[in-house]
Length: 613
Image (cartoon, rainbow, N blue to C red; front, side):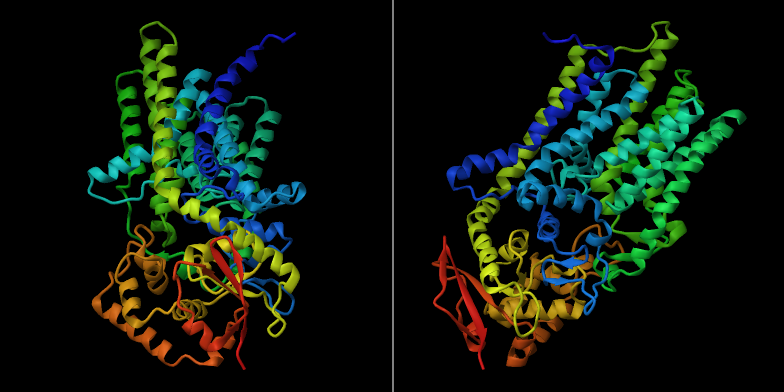
């Protein structure tokens, strides 16, 4: 016999229902891939975030038992004889190991973990945000509906606001679900906010300090998970502390100081090893990640405009007498509204800015939408209380409509993005047997090349295949679009490998000029992501015809003077070619390498190659 729901379980059920709804939406791309591939599905996960290949490659390396300091694209691992520098992946290791350790336990592939991560992350984030919103709404139904609205409409509002201002931006559905960052640790941010809030408002000293300690530990998890989450959390904590200490009475300030100091102390302790890891980072990290030295203010981003609107609503409510400016809920909302301004203008103090576009995509838009939603709730509750009606109650039908419309819109976004990325994902699954076969060949031939003692290198003329090969196989690749984000190569070596990739693909100077003259991964690789991609570096210099001409001449000189010594510097062990597409003329490969008869795998052929004497 089923037991009746208790009061607490009834309160949780609305958040759970909302979380399950968004989890189903998150699974739609994978369901599409399963339907299209049917029995021919080879185990791939669906992806429409280009950076997920790099994250999956790092997870796959950890699943294979490689050390934390590894580079899946060059195949270089940390060793006493060849120590490796820190990369963003090795410093932000918590989510990677959270994926890899269960995968090793249950014998899952990186793709299988990423498939599972989508609905789990959607569920966890929705539930965590619902619990946080309930602090102000005091109603689980309202909190659950608002949580879905914030998570599902964030991209639409951001895109619309930028379009109205004449600005361009990519339209990525549910960006908080990019795997594994920020998907896996995203819920930590809202859990941290909730724990800090409980630490401040709980009268019992022991419970307050307990919440503060757990908040500090949650912050520590974010520190070793994702830079943009923990720095945004730190900015929010400062905003909340300043608002609370400025508005509270003397005794309330004294009580609040204890838990705030505990959170700050635990956070400071967690940052000490982080600073040590950063000191050991690869020299290329600052360049590749577009670290900019600037003190220019940044005041008109979408999240700041939304935060300003939330503050206006609060001021209007205080002016009309619908809420008190010392009200705890108003202080919480104000802290969320102020956070984007702190995040995007911290460079006024630090003098450094690091890809601020990632804040907007992955955290501050959500924070400012939370502030705007809660400010409206406070006004409605204040008006209802002033009229003698107590707390405002939104009809269930309206809340249900908000939830359904939110999930419906999220489904539309996901379906449209899935159809756009369908061709690439279907091809990726078709090619996956090649990666699996290469993994088997690594076991038969050995993962290391006998002469160099390094991992065997695979040449894929298709750079999309090269980018995804390390998500399955243990071999290195000659070059891929994500090679520069790891610490295994210098910028000079990465460019050398890029030139070899193009040379072996029979790209002449004329085709090279065409590649770098238009949007293309090669253009980004040649000039660097900071100079090409929007939002990474506001101080970037635009490309000029002279830049294009100089790079074309440099490449022409390189291929005209190519020698066996250059080929031997990065020796190939395998070549993967589309079997019947005329994808590559083997001319430049055959000048320097001898190929075997090849092995046909699906629509591709894998050749073992050896450098000619």
